[in-house]
Length: 132
Image (tube, rainbow, N blue to C red; front, side):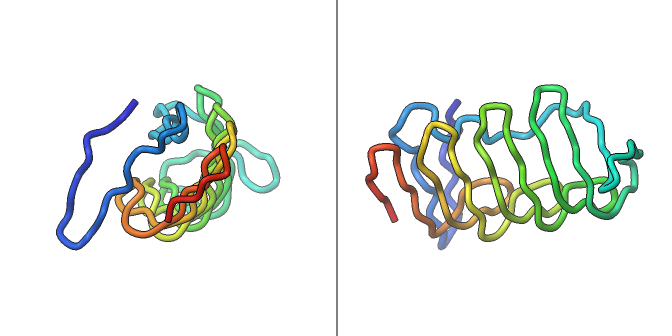
């Protein structure tokens, strides 16, 4: 689904891509998940800091850094749809420069703020068109 556009002074929100469903699965996962450390051992997420893998009930997977139990630092988030976010998180929210590769083709390479695409970036659509 689409979210209403939110304007901030000095920032430009990217329009939703014209290709069907491109990026529609970029949302927060459900709260239930299992977390394993680099050795594959199950660990408690509460207060965990370090590198781990979280597997969510809906099939999403996050592999990367955690701080105090939250996605924080660099990581790779693979949605059940096959879309992949590769970038940085801050307190569970996407932030900074990142790349989203869409399972149906195309990608977005650009900036995120508060979990949303924000500011400058480049979309490459499934038909080969590029919007920057």
